[in-house]
Structure formats: C-alpha cells, structure tokens
Amino acid sequence: MLEDDPNSNTILATPPGKEADDSGRTTDEKRPRWGPQHKGAQELAKLYSSGKRTQELICVYICITLMVLNLGLILRHFRLERISNVVVAAFFGILTADFGSGLVHWGADTWGSVDLPIVGKNFLRPFREHHIDPTSITRHDFIETNGDNFMVALPILGKLAWNFFTRTNAEIQQDYAISAYLFLCSIFVAMTNQIHKWSHTYWGLPKWVLFLQNHHIILPRRHHRIHHVAPHETYFCITTGWLNWPLEKIKFWSTLETIIELSTGHKPRADDLKWAQKRT
Ligand SMILES: [Zn+2]
Ligand SMILES: [Zn+2]
Picture 1 (cartoon, rainbow, N blue to C red):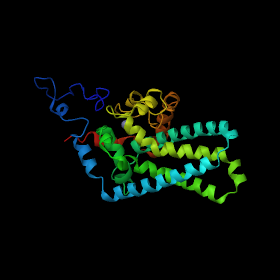
Picture 2: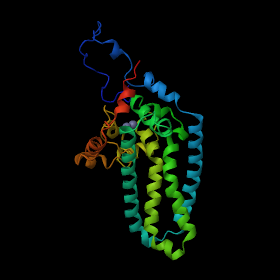
Picture 3: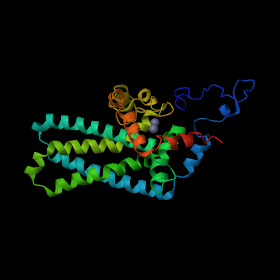
Picture 4: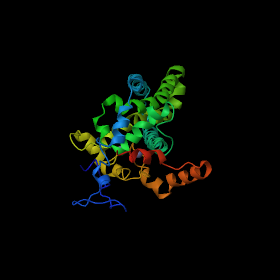
C-alpha cells in the first residue's frame, strides 16, 4: 500500500551473494520490510504494557481538564484591543511547538535504545515501531496516540493556570500575550501526535482536517512522507512541518549529529537500524 511504502523502499537491488528466484526476488526481499508482519514491529508492539497505558490515561484526563480550565481563563481575561498581540503570540506559540516536535522526534529517532531502563521501553519504543510499521499509528486509539504528548503539555498548562490564579488582574493583562503564546504552544504540543496520525490516514478523514492539511496549516500527508524514506534523517518536525524546509537548508540536524558523534563516538540511528533489520 502507498502509505506502508510511500517511497518504494521495498524495491531493493539484489545484494551480492544472494540468489534470486524466478521472480527476481531473494529470500530476504520476500520478508516484509515494513508493516505489521515485520518481526521487529511485532516485538515492539508487544512491549506496550498496562503500566504505560495507565500513565497515558492519567496524562490525557489531567491535560484535558487543564485545557478546558485555561481556555475559560484566557477567554475571561480577553480584551479586543489585544487582538494583534495575541495573533503574533499565537503564531510564535505554534512555531515553538513545531520546533519542539522536531527536537524530541529527532532525539528519540537518533539516539538511545529500547534497552535503556524506563525511557527505552516506554518512550523510545513507539518511535522505533513507527518507522518499521508506519500505519500502526492509525490503529492506535486516542489514549495511545496522544498520551505522551499530553504529558509534555501538562507542565506548561499547569504553570499557566497557576499564573491566572496567583496574579492580579493588572498583571494578567500585562502578560496576556505571553499567556496566549503558552496556551497555543501547549495545545499544539498536545495535538502533535494526533496531527501526525492524520498525516498517515488515507481514508475517512473529516473535511476540516483535509482542509487544514491541504492548506499546510497542519502537517500535510505528502510532506511527512519525506521523513519516512530510510534512513529517516530529515523532516523531523511533525506539528505543522513549517520548519522542516528551513532546518534542512541550514543542515541543522546533520550538523548537530556530527557534533554529537565527534564528541561522544555514538553513531546516529544505530538502534533504529538494528530494529529495521530484525526481519526474521
Ligand atoms: Zn521518525
Ligand atoms: Zn510518521
């Protein structure tokens, strides 16, 4: 299927020393390189635990409560004369969320391993699974899709609510643009993996989601396919994707990787490659 193999990664040249059969394919090539039949993907899917599920559930419920509370507080203190400040602040909030999504995604894809205690199985595992079975995300429910991103948004929303309750009206008005910035940033951080899931969904998307994708207000489907070409080394931003092109132009990710590899000796994406090769 197109979304399983968006860039014909399955079409491989016959490696030296491998015998091809009548159809011209070697034994290795006939093993699934992507998708739910991939042995590595199956192993990773099994590592999703009930403890992890509980953490996601708690984060989603607290985060939604804080989103509703902060929305009410933001609207209660809104003054029409601040609209231009709010629009600029909101724009930078979305840009920050896009950059944050790229930084976290790059870090998780590129460094560390599933074998690391706590972090590996709970937070790096989904990134490894996503590369070898990209459509698994479309089979995840709301909790599994959004739990971790809602967790990242929690401290920002918590701090925002704290500010509203502990400051005077004059102080709230003075910092209103900052509050709008933090609110929009946290909403987009929380929604990032849902937006990412939509970029892998080819059927049944609501018209308003297609509108947002087609006008590049959120991550478009064709745009995200660039990241899914092995070895997954570019276009890491997955909220709006607005920063992917400029970051690629200035070689932001590859420069960071060179600095880290030279100073630590660790090879980028070594664990990602290990899982991709677990085809038997
Ligand atoms: Zn990735
Ligand atoms: Zn993806």
